[in-house]
Length: 131
Image 1: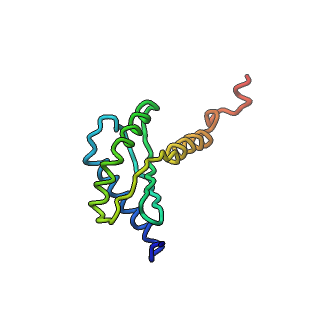
Image 2 (image 1 turned 120 degrees about the vertical axis):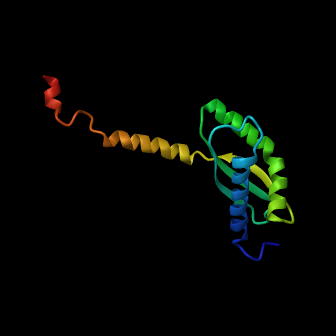
Image 3 (image 1 turned 45 degrees about the vertical axis):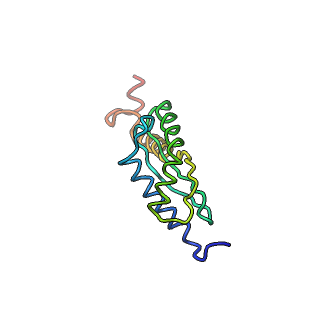
């Protein structure tokens, strides 16, 4: 039976996002989780039993892989914490997914900044460089 309020999954997803972000900011103990981890979004199933938590992880590829492994291992603890904090009848299964949009946006900004810079000094024209 679908929920009566079709927006409930969105509201619960936002509450899950906030709870996971708070955990990662204050309470995470796994040494593999390092660097900047940002919870960008949460997608809930309509029955509220599954949550896809999208995270952006900054750092080297090795740090990112270690952080993602650490996140996967904390999922069951987070499930319990989220269920208690939100007082849900069923705590949702949590699955972490990498959100590459932040890294992609930073790369695009770098490319655009390169386009804005003049290719040669302002007081020099292409003809001046040829001699």
